[in-house]
Image (cartoon, rainbow, N blue to C red; front, side, top):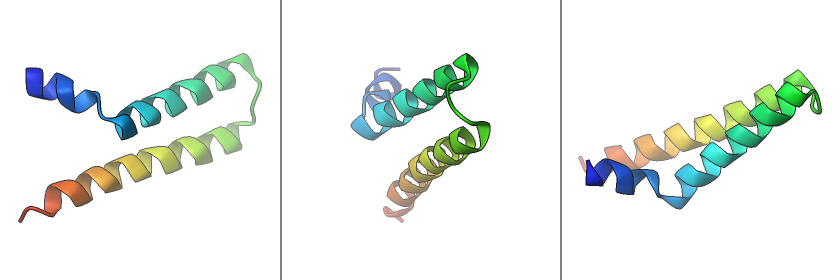
Length: 60
């Protein structure tokens, strides 16, 4: 359990979560266009998972 909690406190994960949260909040308020939000959130999520996959696969 402690390992999972410590893994959530990595800087890149915090940045990804904050970015997604900010764009979701701005989208719900109607401050941003949907296409722009979708592109940014998809880029952040893709980078996050690509980086995680690359780090996990490097040990093999």
